[in-house]
View 1 (cartoon, rainbow, N blue to C red):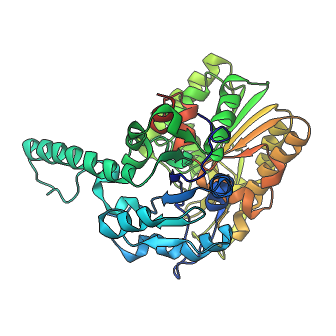
View 2 (tube, rainbow, N blue to C red):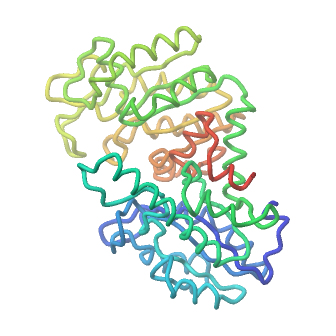
View 3 (cartoon, rainbow, N blue to C red):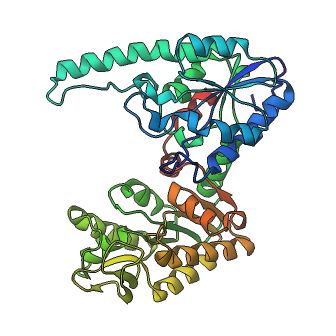
Length: 418
């Protein structure tokens, strides 16, 4: 069943969204991309004459806490939908059940953070560090049992289920994968956002126009090993950027000052360089860097070769020579995947490399390339620089996008297709 085929008139829809948005210290939303991305799905349900129970997580709480309460996004959600959204201060319990049962067509109920319950993720909490294997096994069994009741309760609020949370599609959580089992094929579906995400990933993986270039940023090689290895089987060019640069540079014998580096991954970096050669992939590494004498926007800064960073200095962005090399590769590409900025783009003085990469992607897109930008920081980048409209698709998924590109089956997608 697709969302376009389904008539929500008189129906209550449980919609799993990904409203895990960044908040500042005063609980103001600093980037509402994920909320706006869900609007077409929510508005379709309301236009049909349906009502909506919204489930989401926020952050990684270990129990109820004001810091991660979804009440902080309630007013903005009401503004976006142009109706007063109701709020249940618990996703379980009597209040949620009563408010869900009383919903009238055209009304919306936002449930409190699903992750306030360990059952959402299905992992036991509060285990002592010295817990025995037997105690761990018992706790795991207990949480799986209570997870069934938790999931059943969430499903009981609604007549149909819509998953529009691509950002959590790689997790087999109660509200993303397990709840779908309580609805038949005619009453569970992807939202518009999920549909678009699945199509965009499929295009990058299965409808590749060459040359195919991936730009991989991020601070740690260790968190990107599997995706890099998978990409080496698919891409023509692999650009390594961000903090990973310095692990590769040190592995090749360079001096990196106090730049971020995984010393235990130097051999791995060399292995990846060798694999790229074997597969005929053009592995593109930085040749110069913008370095600073402290981790601060106001630090003293200068450019130097990436393998000759002075003691006490650290690389916080790529330099002008590298910008040119990266941009030239990108502009000649027909399929582009961007995951991770080139430097500490949060600091205004170290944004230039990421902006240059973004602008090169926009230019390539204008010339007919398909460009997919994904991963929280890359999305924040294109939004910060006003480039989002110039790329083919901006994904709301970080880990989910990476796992999909690794070729893994995502539980949240499989649960709808089953």
